[in-house]
Image (cartoon, rainbow, N blue to C red):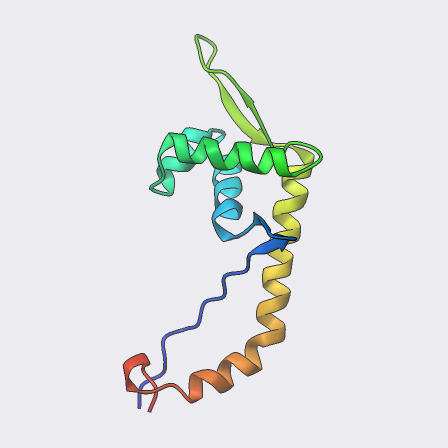
Length: 122
């Protein structure tokens, strides 16, 4: 018997019927923080510029304060960075994911032990 492939956990935060935040938006924020650019962040994720901007606009509209602050390009260059709210939302989401993984590890292991051959179980 081989060990099953590691499980992954993908948490999405819905408030009412609205998906407000999840792993894709978290990664986009992290990439914006790392690259200083919405377009570069999108490229690093294999996402179009339009899609990256759409997600940023969606996040900025959903929260009381914008999560991403951007400046237009031009001779001096543009750029983007996370606001204090953006940094706080990203840190809180990462903490939720970490705590959830820790809390659910025993049950995930129980499920993994019951997997069939197709997923590396018995």
